[in-house]
Image (cartoon, rainbow, N blue to C red; front, side, top):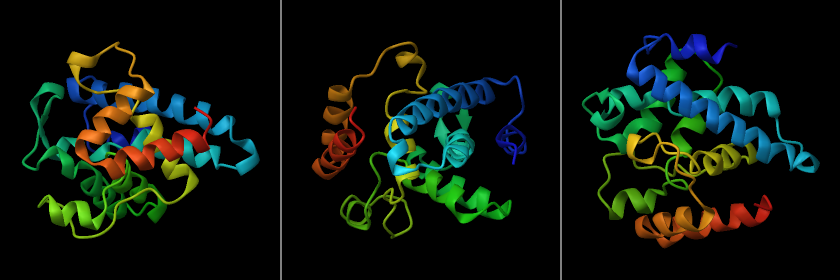
Length: 182
């Protein structure tokens, strides 16, 4: 499976959005593999991580995020489940779509969706597999926002930002950081 070929079904190479997505995805892939290689005793699937990390944000073009070139109609928070839908429609194995759906924040629970009236399907979207958790964690260390370009994001900053969303998000991320020895 060629992740870039799948991306190019939805994005035009050379456009701002393509460059933002692919640049971010490559950084997240590199960070994911770095984390995974330090967890070899847990036997993470490195080939899957490499492909899934490249595809984790494939749904962003369907959302409204002008700062990164997204001109879709849906709120940005929807990009994960929309990405899952795209990959499901392409016939990819379910596990690829689940990475898309479950990487946002530190995962979004059905309770979060309901209590915050989020425009998402009413189901838990929290990373479950080791590979999903690794990609979710790696994603937090790099922002697609031009304002954040080149800035190093620390674990403390990530936990603080996730805590503003939900104490559960911050707690879940902190547990993964400890489990991954980061």
